[in-house]
Length: 264
Image 1 (cartoon, one colour):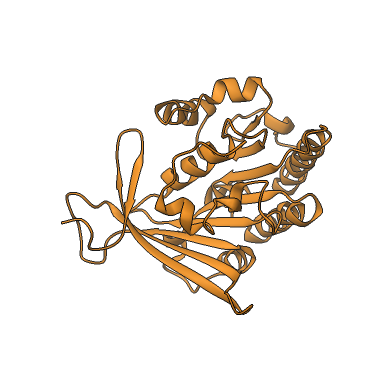
Image 2 (cartoon, rainbow, N blue to C red):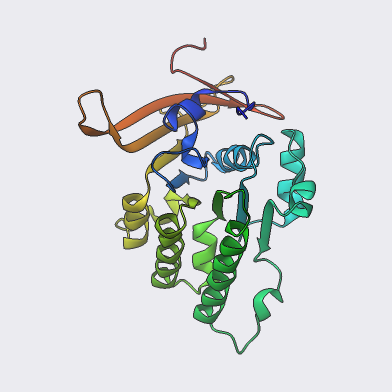
């Protein structure tokens, strides 16, 4: 069945078919990194990708790890976008891990940060394997919101977070899963670019940077989006990175994307 989700420039930038979060991708599982900053948050990109992954035209499953907000937060936002997360969770298409709850994964004083992340990955892997056991060969998308808060949860250990991300990344090769992560780029602005951020950018097939306008505030433009799609082949068989730049405006229940200079 064809995807009935309305197309927009962001979908087209994700290689023309939105295949970065779709089981139809010829490249199998992919990793998307969303980077934002305090002035311009990128949560709306994550919400868009979540909605696409739960499109009614597919049976895809999302494993969502939330270090940022409770389930009710995402449910309220996605309802405005026409996607009922409560129903998706009941139908087992959304497996939601609320890392804000104190008792999740037996979190107590005897558990170290490493123990918790190892236990969490074990549950993620079990969820992926259980979802793939269905005869319809479901595609799995793992979403992490957000990496910087995971690092806080790990008592500031970027090495533990990087290990966890590498384990999740291995699922893209082992099971063809997709991995989507959100991170705050300006968290590291006071230091040299750390290994964690560099490694995430290296691993990602698609890097989406959400930034304020270089010219300052504008009434009808809320920020700019740079989408770097790595390793695409051109008509001559050469591999290159494709970079697309857009402006965006956030509305109540949607986001409008347009080319720079097309809005006056």
